[in-house]
Image 1 (tube, helix red, strand yellow):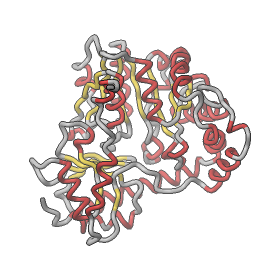
Image 2: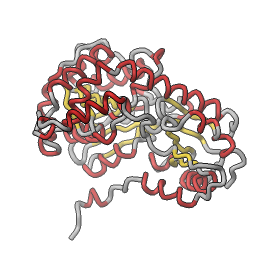
Image 3: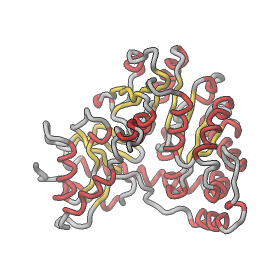
Image 4: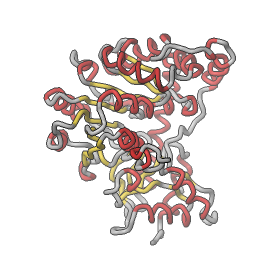
Length: 388
């Protein structure tokens, strides 16, 4: 008996393959340095852990909750994003999901049918492409020029619009490249989507790690018309250090939330309630802690820039939030070979650019945010004199 052929044709998650490469490392350069995955580098705040324990120990968290999330969390998050973006988002315009991957999944089910298309900035986050593949939706690449820091071009996107296209996805700060899209570029994409009757889906999982001087990420929620065609996705995992509690959020106009509620009722009934209870407290209470974590991440970013300056043959094509995209110094060699040998011979695990789209063999991606600055400073000795 066969499974759904769309699912069978979807590539398997690549992280386990890369993790297996570490078994070949003999320890010659010291402890293994894992730069492969966006994992919070700090545990949750001690008070957050207490709130999680209290919620888990109560009967309420064991019961079903509202399909779109507990009211207290939606109210806290609505207030937070309204202040952050200088606009108005109502609690009824928020759905709490079991992680941001699920938020993307339900958004795609809501916006497109099999045989239609969605534009993804390429290189792309592989779970986005996998989701579209198993739904029978074309993942249409929007090539992002390394010379432009992998920031997508709205004019190039418009040239790819046809009658099958239903949505344009933006990811900022970007996974895998780390690129941060300027507010004016996001505004141009919003204008394009309004003119061409398309949805704009903007994934801002890593927005909490922008430097303080970056200012407001964009002004979409300050626009009167945002509810007509904008959907925003977010993850609580990184900012609060709780990826195991699987909580994300989706913001959309109330009519879209009503449709998405049907999908969520079939997928999750309700998002995990222990974490919801703790987050409703944490959003206002831990603002200073979140800011301190962002400062720490940006110090690691600066340390990574400094370290890589010692090995200029490994060029930083883009960097931001959790990630850097490095151009490796071996033209014509497959990125997978570079990454596998780097793990086996130098004890540094990065992901090949080919994991994020078949066309990119020139880069490897590193996730520096979960590595201490002291470890980052020792990277040049591992990169230096590495040869294929």
